[in-house]
Amino acid sequence: MARFVLRRLGLALITLFLLSVVVFTIAAVLPGSVGRAILGPFADQQSVDNLNRELGVDGPLVGRYIRWFTDALQGDFGNSYKFKAPVMDFVPTALWSSLKLAAMTFIIVVPLGIVGGTIAALRKGKAVDRFITVAGLSLAVTPEFVIGIVLIIVFAVKLGWLPSGGSAKGSIWDQVQVLILPAVTLTAILFGYLSRMTRAGTIEALSADYTRTAILKGLPRRTVLRRHVLRNSLVPTIAVLAVQVSYLLGGLLVTETLFNYRGLGLLIFDAAGDRDIPMLMGSVFIVGAIAMLLNFIADVLIAWLNPRVRLGNRQ
Amino acid sequence: MTMPAELEPTAGAPTGYTAKAVRKELRRQLFRSKTFIVGSLIVLFWVVCSIIPSAIATHDPSKQDPLSKWIHPFFQEGHWLGTDRFGRDVFSRAIYGAREIMIVAPAAVILGTIIGIVLGLLMGYFRGPLDDALSRLIEALMSLPLILVALLALTALSSGRGTIILLIGILFGPIIARTIRAAVLAERNLDYVRAAELRGERSTYIMFVEILPNVMGPIVVEFTVRLGYAVFTMAGLAFIGFGTQPGSPDWGRTIFEERAGLLSNAWWPCVVPALALASLVVAINLIADGIQGLIDR
Image (cartoon, rainbow over all chains, first blue to last red; front, side):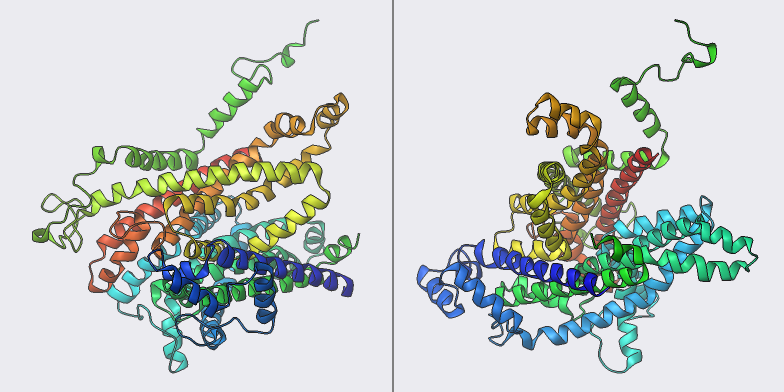
């Protein structure tokens, strides 16, 4: 197990390095001149040069990259161009808000997806199964702002039950009210994938020999499902959760914009609108690093649950 | 030599496994799938709209009319789905709004598929250090939310139509390559590849002439699935203001611009393009589902 974790950690670090290269290349190399990208095509060359010097982006590329990456590893992403203050003054609060939204989404989607997938698997081929599969798939592929708009119309405008947006502030009850609609929007997207994986895992576990043995030795149906089927069917579900996290982090961008929710997504949206390159690089890199960390945790969790994975990787 | 009666091919069944017969049978089964037909009809409708919008739309999509603002749907004063805050016809805007996405999404996915085929064949056929290095790079790319990378690049570069096509194509390429690589890996140790190698064929010939036709199934599925994702991603980008001009009838753009109306109960200027968009994405996925079901069988 320790060897597997170390190996996987090594891979994660290499990926983190590649991620930094991708972010740096796109944001700092492609535009040719960062100052020009910020000031636009009509600024005079003098102010572009001044800005480049001010931002420290006028030296050789490799040196700039090494400086940016070593600073980034120490949690310093430079100063926001717009706010003239360190990027890290803004990211943690925004990240915390986004984590609240992500947590709320997971609280709704995980039980729902597992129950939905299990029901679909137990009624395989019946109408209920078709309904859950088709509805889940359709919701999963519909853009999140379309789903969000429908939710706003129904629950905020027509029924007036929930606020149509805003930030999570005040008492827990206030925060939950604000979080419900964006969280349900993200749930709609994730439900399809999650229930699909659970369904596939459950069908496989249902037809496995150990399940037949458990049924034949006379265990009650409920015990068979809980102890033998569900426990095994959850492995692919965890894997898909980790993959979907990177989607979820992107979905936050659109969802937070629609609901005007002050999280990392809205921070990135605003940074892009203001051409605030340091802020953009910093927040995108952090989102990527988080996605990578969660992938790593999921892999370790799967290896821990399923010895075949960690033993198979030893060769 | 005569065959026993029960082994003789019966009328109607495929008489031989010629490529043509197999294709015909596949097509027959595809058109038996209800999801595939429904999906195709909807996509066909939007294709027609993007080619000849004027034949379907009832009004000029950008013509403003201050005297008939906020007409409610349905079918009032000659506006089937009402008008928006500038008095523009909502139905016509939805019809014209199809064009942008119907050009950009397929173009981007075709580019991505070409990149994916080349990379996937190279990785799957040669394996080794090239495969390892590219796999790591793809993993790094995939762990980043795609829309964020696109946003980063569009902010750094310009955000015209060409940039978006290039960008989505380049970002999708490695993801498609991963699927094709897996399919190539399954093929590369089969006898026909061995035989071609023993004949002394060049590796480019083996990859593109021998292996490629045999991995077309996964490529077609991947193409349709990615097309759905491309529409999804582009609508998202348009929604946050990239790739289209203000006032353009593009769906994502219109939804973003009209969303304020939602709160004052003027839902239709925003909901109509939203439903149009949803119908297109769901339809593409129905097609993908139909093809997938056929290949899995």
